[in-house]
Length: 134
Image 1 (tube, rainbow, N blue to C red):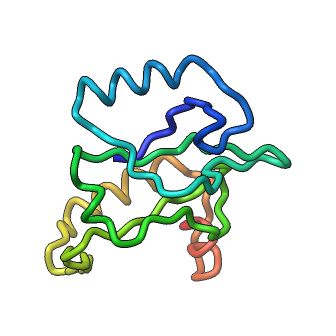
Image 2: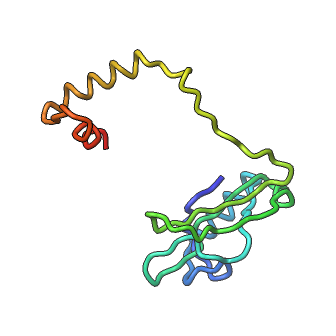
């Protein structure tokens, strides 16, 4: 489970300390969860401010099953960075979209309804339809 803990502690790589760390420790003790973060790579970056407030939680003992935990350096449109990890012996998930399973009747009705609510759209040619869809 990933969360934005907003619990700052210098030992975890934050630039300041707050009392939320005490609450976080109490929650972890009560719920039998542990922090899976490895290292102190910032998970929150805003301008020159960088903090380690994004944490990954898991059941106690699962830490030994994590083979690669990392904070992604991939650019995003957010001040929070992705956290990625792999569980030992996990099977990669492959999402497959089967268009045969779509409810085309429902799709058409929904599309008609949306088009009726937007009379200002002029879709007499393919270019205008493309603009309306985006």
